[in-house]
Image 1 (cartoon, helix red, strand yellow):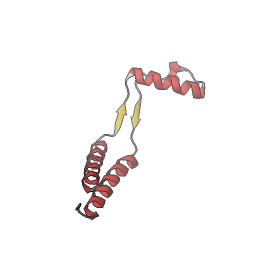
Image 2: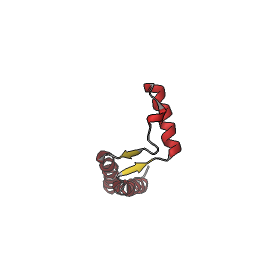
Image 3: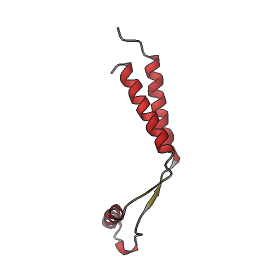
Image 4: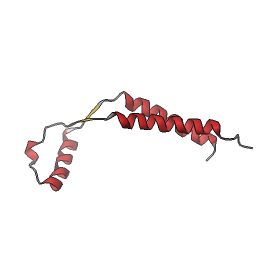
Amino acid sequence: MNRNHYMALGTVLLLLGLTVFKVETVTLTEDSTRFLAQQMEQQQQSLISTVPVKKTIAIPPWPRFLIISLGAILMLHAVAMQKPG
């Protein structure tokens, strides 16, 4: 990979991290909540009827900072690399 690839990948990760930074919670649809309940029932042997209609998942702050940091590191690495040729 040359420096253009690193810069492009770093830019995409940085912008993705900034986008994820604005999202605090994700609300699943009824179908995905039901599927998740069925998968959890196989592991825990609990009842599906106790599952709420829509599940809300809170995103912790560390993945946001991880994606932004990886993007910034790749961009700095691209700047530090030698020019081709």
